[in-house]
Image (cartoon, rainbow, N blue to C red; front, side, top):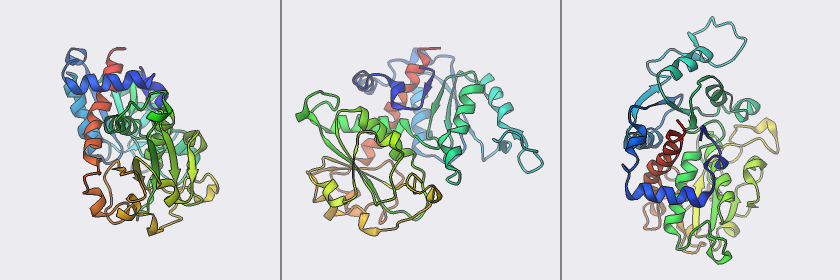
Length: 328
């Protein structure tokens, strides 16, 4: 595996989930693969779970780790071609990337959407430059449009908390999984919901997306999911509720891209919402704004699995790095 961006990159989900369980049973089983190998983690944006879990996964696999925070201690990087660099950016990404590649065997990139130019964001301009010019395997640690390490961890978590394999062909085995929009005070990217939708469509689950009208995700991520604008109806009988805010994706109205076009607090997940479910589990990628996305009583309830979900970030990343090490 040379790149990890979309669900297709991981191959058969049954095999990936089995590998995740194998690693969870013995996190140091494959240490020999990373001996004398170096992972470079490049952050254009802030991180807690991604930074810690990816570094831990690499160390479990025997790797050395270099962490570069582009906004703290590095030269400011220009990402656009054809510009006159007479501002505060001293180095161009096109020189920086191959230099970074000289110092490592594998690169993880975290670069959020700017939320002003949809075409630029959805072209994954920054990530694709690393893939093209680094000469190294590259994986996404959340990009402008996707967060596959999170979505893989989400799938592992659902598998663990569901009583039958989520990739079973049996209709009776399907859990109902609902991705629900919730209000937020800031404009957030669509990366987490995009990837969650992509991975749930690939798994054998009954998948529903619910959000206010006008917040439709890109059809390539929605796939075969059922879109329900009535949140109550969407929650009925749900086994898993995945709450997440996203700014307007600009699908129905491009001028709205990246904007907050709804602050409807009736979408906040509280005990009333959860009472509509089938004793459903509550999920969120974290960090979460309490009182906006979810109430205290829901996120602190026995049915909240946000901490095991976060813990599985180490496992999902371990599988990805292991696969990449096997190709070196």
